[in-house]
Length: 151
Length: 137
Picture 1 (cartoon, each protein chain N blue to C red):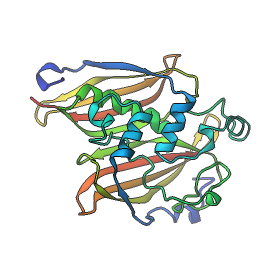
Picture 2 (picture 1 turned 45 degrees about the horizontal axis):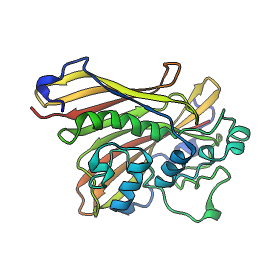
Picture 3 (picture 1 turned 135 degrees about the vertical axis):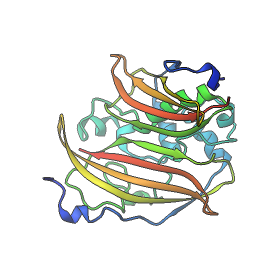
Picture 4 (picture 1 turned 180 degrees about the horizontal axis):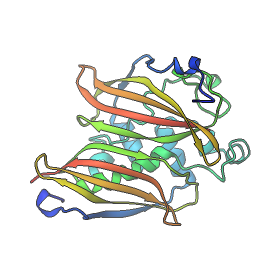
C-alpha cells in the first residue's frame, strides 16, 4: 500500500499533454553533437540526429517567470507530489527511422505510471511517461519510455 | 566494422572516458533546454538539493552509453533499441568510463544485443544499459 501516493494523484495516470510539433534543424543537431562530443561524422555534420537527440524535446517552452525555484518548468502532466526534488531515472527507446534535418515531428507524451519505492535515503516516487514520436505524416519515428524520480 | 560473421558473444566494444567540464555541461543543458539548477548552481545544488556537487546529467550519461554502440556500428549497422538506467549520481570533476560487450547474437534476424556500462573511478557501474543493433552479413 502506497503511503505517499493518494488516489487523487493516481488519477493523473493515463493523461496526455498537447502534442508538440518539432522542426528539426541541422544547426540543432550539430549543437547537440558538439555538446555530447559525438565522434561519427554524420552526427558532427548534422546529417543525422544521434539516438538521444530528442531527450527533453517534448518539454513546452515557458517564460522565465513560469519556472519553479529549482529552475525547471512545472509539469502539466503531474499533480502536486509530496516529494519535490527530481532526478533522471533512465529511458527505453525503440527506433523506427533516422531523424534528419528538415524533418517535422509530432511528439505525444502520456503519463503511464506513478509508483513509490523506498530508497537508501528515504522514499522515492517514480514517474513514468511514454513519448511517441511520429512524422507529421503519421509514420512512427521513435517510442520513448522515460522515468523521472522524485526524492 | 562489425558484421555477423566476426561478432561473437563476449566481443568487447571500445571503452571511452568522459570528464565533463563546466562548459560542456552548460552546452549540453543548453542543447536540451534544461534549466535545472543542480547542473550549474553550486550553492543551490549543495545547500538546497543536498548534492555533493554539480550533478552530471543522467541523460548525458545515457548518451555516452549510446555512443559506445553507435561508434562500434559506424555507418553500417542500425540501432533498433536502446535503454539505460541512472542508478547512482555522478558529479562534476569525476571521470567516467563507458563500455560494453556483446551478450547475444541472433543470426535469424541479424541482431546483436550489447550490454553497456558507465563506471566511476571506483569501478562501480553507475548507469547500466543495453542496446539491440542490426548488423550486415
